[in-house]
Image (tube, rainbow, N blue to C red; front, side, top):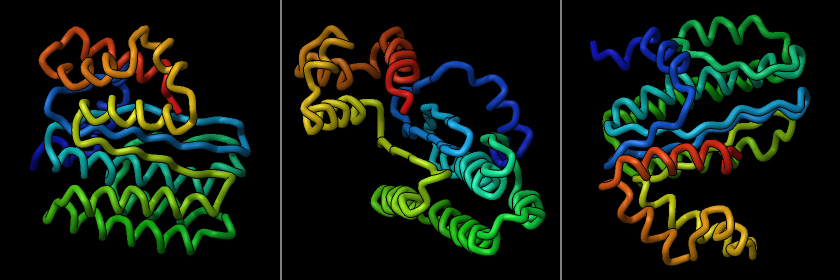
Amino acid sequence: MKRYNLIYYWQNFLANQDDVSLKPNAYVIKFCIVNKYSYDYYCNWYSFAKVEKLISFLKCVVIPSTYITKAFGKDENTIFLDALGYYETIDIIEESEDDDKNEILQEIKEVYKILDNLKENFCIKKFKGFINKINERDIKKNGIFTRMEFFEDVKEIGRDLVKEFESDDMLDELEKQMDLNKNQIIDLFDGIEKNPFMLKRIGTYLSNTLAF
């Protein structure tokens, strides 16, 4: 069994992931949980070179954390963030007195099934569709929700940032934050995988400035 299929691996991963560590030629995912009842949120960026590790992160960390927070977050005024297996996650949620418990259990079983299929037959288009489905589903429930963004590599983040800030008519703010103009920002991200020092600096910038 590969180490990233072990719950202990992910518990240790979370305990030691203080700073964003972006990797060259790797997938990047931004994962956020918001609990409006407790005025609390968690948000971080993660980078994985292998599809199997990306899927395992979602199965062992994202899905348990998301759905246990949905089941208990309102009453306990908190966000749950930990690594758990499928059966332990189901057992914990079944103890909840939340009115939506059965719906949460149905959703989580459906999500695990989709992730198992993606692990065997990974496709970027289908994976992005899965991320969008999770985000759109949570729009209906404003109290506790998850937001995820997926990028095929670090280079894609630069172009997406520029596009997002342009659409909000705030490109000048992004240029001011990074002390670069639009084309320089795109060029920086396009060549960043060859520059480990800048890769680390961009990781810190994303974590501190664009947490949510």
